[in-house]
Every structure is written in C-alpha cells, then in structure tokens.
Length: 283
Image (tube, rainbow, N blue to C red; front, side, top):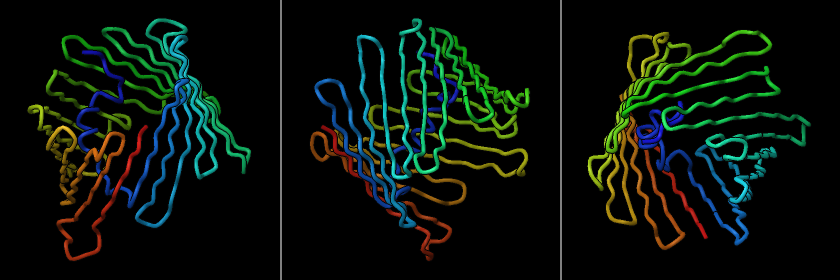
C-alpha cells in the first residue's frame, strides 16, 4: 500500500465520520463540467441553517503532458485564489504547489509554497506561508509492511522557534486501518479505527482526549451501508447523544441527491435538530 501523508493517516475513519453528512448545510448545490481541452469548471453554493449563503466559482486547467495544473477560483467573500501545481516536473515523485490569494476590497494578499515528495516507503511534505510569519510546517511519514510512523513540526521564522509539533503511529491493511495521533504539542490525543466489513458495510470509530481540558474522552462511531450500486446510507452518533443520518443516491448519470438530518437525542423536545439537502450535477 502507498504511504499516506501525515494528515491522512486516519483518513479512512475521518472520511467515514465526516463526509456525506448533508445536515451541516441547510442546502447545497454543486455543478461540474469538463471541456474537451481539459478545463474543468465547478460552481458551488451553500445556504447555512443561520440563513447566510456562500458560493464559489472555480476553473482548473490540466496539461497532462507537462504535469502542470492551474486552478483559479473566486468566491462570494470576494477572494481570488490561484494555484499552480507541478507534478513530477521538477523531480520524480515531487509535486510543487504555489498558491496566491488576493482580496480586491482591502488589497490584502497571501502567498504560499507547498512541496510533496513521495517514495515507496516514505511521504514528506513542506508548507511555507511566505507572508504570515513567515512560517514553515514540515511533516514526514515512513512505513513498512503496513506499519506507519509520522511526525509534524511548525517553525516560525520571525521567532526562530518551533511553535507546534505532532506525532502519529498507525497500521494500514487492505480492509482496516488503525491509528493514534497526538497534536497540539502532544496535548490532544485521538485514536481511530476503520473496518471495511464487506462490499456493502463499512464501520469506524474515533475517540479524542484533550489532556489540558480534563479527563472526559469524546467518542464518535459511524457506519455506512451500500443499499445498491447507486445508493448508500450512513449513520453516526457521538458521546453527547447527537445522532446523524444521511442518504445518497445517483438519480441518473451525472445527477446525485444527498439528504441528511441530525438529532440531539438528549433534547428531542427542543429545536436543536437539523435537516439538509444537496444536489450535484456533473457533465
């Protein structure tokens, strides 16, 4: 199996616990289209439960012959983002990203450079914020026979000091993964487990303990069931008694509907529950 990035050591369980739960927005819509000359367009819009709305327009051009991708986006906060990706262009296994953003209203801007280097037994990344700080965040994961060990550190150039560090260990097999991650200067610990039971059923859990906040441990469990080739259902619940359900179905080629709801089982008589819908159109 390929070595994951540091932030992806617990990706399988994190995705199961967080993706495709549509109650997080009151409504969402996404439109995708790709032109014959490899330009991909995406338009997204979301409405929150508080009544605010947001949107994003994105265009992405990929030149497969040179390994170059250019992405330009503009959102309703009036932020212009540009990203240039060079994949295997500088060296085999190296992806370089150069990112810039600009706010026309305030004339504020940002600039970042990211590097991802991947080989059969390790995966390392470096993220540089060239304006704020400047700061550098470097992480590395090494693996052998499914066992994974990784670390991350943040360095503030202006302060000439390491301002954060994290460690992780994990094990990845074709049908299950397990990991323990310590973040926030090794003060917050999380343990995650994911299991692909069979072709229809997936299950996972994650527990989190903040050593500075007290002795209470947070817990989330989730499961996914594929009803048929075009639909699936998900359910999760946490230690606070908040449960969520979701349903995803491919209505026709290129049209996907998502429905979701969350319920506070400790306050069933109060208006704390949420319902959301999502439509995705892809051509």
